[in-house]
Image (cartoon, rainbow, N blue to C red; front, top):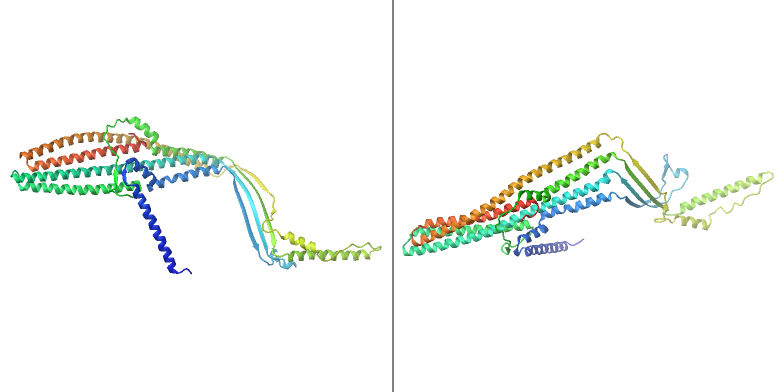
Length: 506
C-alpha cells in the first residue's frame, strides 16, 4: 500500500506544476496585449483566441470528415476476425440427451481452438451514390456558418475597439475640462483679489473643478472597462494600462451606392451563402429520397480457417488402438472361418494387434496444430441485386418531405434577401446620417469654442458674470462630447454596414 504522505506530496507537486503552467500561460497572454495594439492586430488575435469563434471553427473538422466518410462509403468494406478458445475435459452431449459416455466412449480431453476469417463486403444504392454531394454542400454551409461567426467576431471586436478609443478620447476631453476648470478657478481667485468678483464666483469655480474631477474619474473607469471588454472579445488577458491603441478613425464622406452594396452583399453575405449551400444540400436530398425506388447491389466474399488441438493425445491413441485391435480380431475371425471351409481357404496376415511407434508419432504430429496451423475453409462469394417494388408509402413520404424542405429553404432565402435589402438601406441611411451629424457637430464645436473664448474675455474685463463663463464652458464640453460621440457613431454604423455586406467596403 502506498503511504498517504507520498500521495499528498505527489498531489501537492502536481498542483504546483499546474498553477505554474496556468501562471505562465496567463503571463504569455498578457505579453501579447502589451504595447501598441491596432485594430488589425486585435482582429488577428481574436481569430486565434476567441473561444466562441474557435468552437464554431471546429465544426469544419467534422464537415471535412463527413465528406471523406461519404466518399469512403463508395469503397468496399473489409473485416478481419480471429479468436482462440478452450474446452475442458468431460463428456459433451451428442444429441437426444446422450453423451459420449453413454455410447461407450471414454471422457474426452480438453481442446484448444483458434480460427480466423477475412471478409469483403460492398453495397451500392442511391443513398450511397448521392451522399457525397450532399456532404459537400453541407460542408459549404458549415464554411458559411464559420464566416458568419467570423463576421460577428469582426463586428464585436471593431465595436469594442471603437468604444475603447472613444473612452480614451473621452478621458482626454475630461482632463482638458479639468484643466479649463482649474484655470477658471485661478482666474476667479485673481479677480477676487482685485475686487472685481465676489467670493461666490470663487466657490462656483471650485464646484466646477470638483465636477470635472468626478468626470475624469468616470472616464478613467470607462477606459478600463472598455479595454477589459476589448480583451474579452480578443480572447486574451492583458494589462489595461500597458496597451496603447494605435488605430485612427478619421471622418470621411461615405461615397457609397446602394445597388453596388446590395450586389456585393448578395455575393458575400455569409447568411445568404449558408442558406444557398443548405438549399443545394436539400436538392441533393430530394435526389437521395427518389433513389429509394432504384435497385441496390450487394457483394460479399470471405475466406477462413480453424484449428483444434487436444491437450493430450491419449484419447486419440486409445481410439486408434481400439480400431487396430478391432481389425485384428476381425482378421482372426475371418481366418478361422476360412480354415473351416472345405476345401479351406488360405488365411490372411493379421499383423500386430498393437500400434507401432510410427503410428503413435503420426498421431502426435497430427495433433500439433494450435494456434496457427489452420485448416482452410471453403471460400465464399455472393452477389445480390434487390429491386424494391412496394414498401408502403414511406418512400414517397420521404420524397415529399425533401421537396418541402427544399421549398422552405427557397422561401427562407427569399426572405433573407428582402431583409438584407431593408437592412442595407437602413444601414446606409445610418452611415450617411452619422456623417452629416458629425459634420454638424464639428461646426457646433467651433461655435462653442468661439463662444467660450468670448465669454472668458468678457469675464476678464468684468462685462460678464461667472455664470456666463460656466455656461459657455458647459456648452463647449457638451459640444466636444457630442462631436466625439458623432464620430464614433458614424464608424460604428459603418462597421455594422460592412458586417451586412460581408466584406470591407472602405
